[in-house]
Image (cartoon, rainbow, N blue to C red):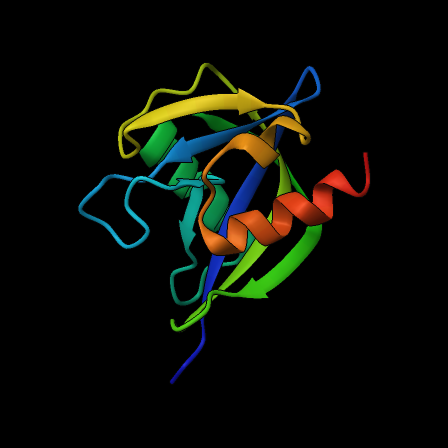
Length: 127
């Protein structure tokens, strides 16, 4: 199985990070995730973050930092790379059922997708 890279944006504002609830009809439907999407062929993580966040949330990415955490999504070809992202604008849920801003500790109470849960545990240890 060929590995497919996915960029997950960690957008922090006022000590809270943005997560979105996946649509029910999709894999991990109803669970919450950090926004982002697949990196297209010939595209880097910065370009993917800019494209995905514009499409999904109407946000304008101003910078993409280093990869903070990487994990292979169990039973799938996806490798999810979590990047610190700075974005302008107020997010609009074009793809997600809902959006929310949570502190790293509050993420422990949110029903996150498995890879996002692993990242949130890693993040919580650094607060």
